[in-house]
Amino acid sequence: VLDIRRILEERNADIHIIAKIENQEGVDNLDEIIRVADGIMVARGDLGVEIPTEEVPLVQKAIIDKCNLVGKPVITATQMLESMVRNPRPTRAEASDVANAIFDGTDAIMLSGETAAGKYPVEAVKTMARIARRTEKAVNYHDLLAAKRIAYKPSVTDAIGHATCSISADLGSAAIITATKTGSTASMVAKYRPEAPIIATTPSERVAAKLCLVWGVYPVSVQDIEGTDQMIEESINASLKAGLIRRGDLVVITAGVPAGIPGTTNLIKVHLVADVLVSGTGVGNRGVVGRVCLALTPDEARTRMRPGDILITRSTDREFVPAMEKAAAIVTEEGGLTSHAAIVGLTLGIPTIVGATDAVQKLTDGEMVTVDSVRGLIYRGVTRVL
View 1 (tube, helix red, strand yellow):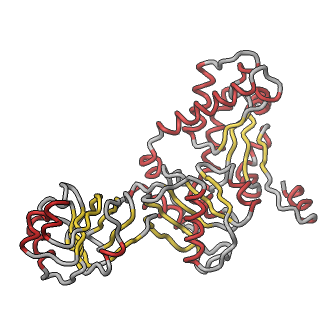
View 2 (cartoon, one colour; view 1 turned 180 degrees about the vertical axis):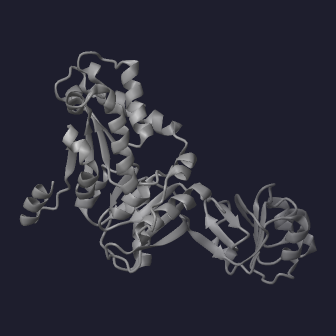
View 3 (tube, one colour; view 1 turned 90 degrees about the vertical axis):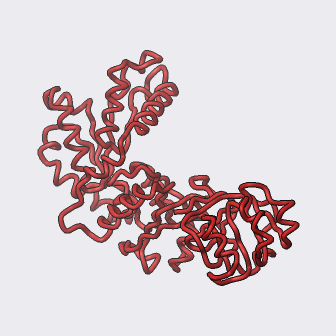
């Protein structure tokens, strides 16, 4: 492996080395090979010839465990769906074999003869994909994360990766976004097998290609940006454009400060992917979603308000109360925690925002918004509020 690495370095070739373990010598030197290779392939077919057949499953599990522990990708290959070289459907044992490799923690599963020389190459790929998708849905990711061991004296990147996955699991985030130059941050996050998809945003097409091999990672190309805030914004926009997240999703972002320097992962941010339309002072402890009802007078409010609407007005008085009782939330431009709207909101237990400057101008009658009375924010559309 080191000889190959030396040849590549002499030619300035940025190519990863996947070491294929196919004999007893490879098994005996597994730890050293994992240390110097960029990934490992478990070649069960050749391995079964070189070592006793009954040892192959044990060696496969050991290789996967060791690679998972250090965050390096491992590929389980050969004879995955061997019968599909000749038949359109696999045996039940083969389906179980593929699923068990995924349960064991393999990053990738690989077909060989089934697609290289088989009669049903497309069916083999479709079958393996179906098995993989179904198996991943059955994994208990909470227990898996709890069982993952963090290294003694971990690196900053390793600790950040573990913390990111824990936060994502606690909050049920829609995705984890890792802004990475070299791919190491995404690999360290993937090491802990989070349930949320890992979106790796990188300016390097080479890194994006290499990350396709890593468990749960969806690489997305972005522009090379130095500022941290700009880099986070670019990562979110690229993820939205790729269709991997949607407006209203909660995501956990991990990156490095200063941005653009490899090996500086030291930041975790919980981010709500939403447009803030109006801000003010919140009265209440929850968020609600509803249709905007702009009403500047009590009569207008009484005739136009429907149950569950969000009442938007400049200020309120006692004549507004019948309409306020129908509201899912109340928003006024008038400020003050002793204002009429704030007191009514507290009394009726209705989420309220006061001091929402220019709310009447900024919000459109009939549009759907989310009111966060804890933070005093109004978001466009349906958004998750913590």
